[in-house]
Length: 73
Image (cartoon, rainbow, N blue to C red):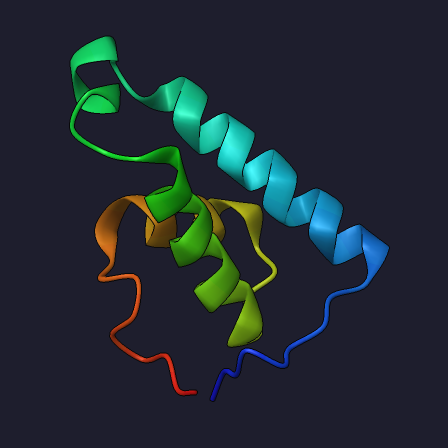
């Protein structure tokens, strides 16, 4: 379960930032025109809020998931 009240330590914030940067760099220019960087960030935040810490899985979640499918307020 995730919540807007989730807090992340410095290491997790760096991990999420790196996952976002790497995910964005993997996209082709035409793909970057069809997705917002903030959408990728939201997906990474949700995955991390659910406990995910593996960089590969965070990138996969950013690219292949509905960002709010399992998000609870």
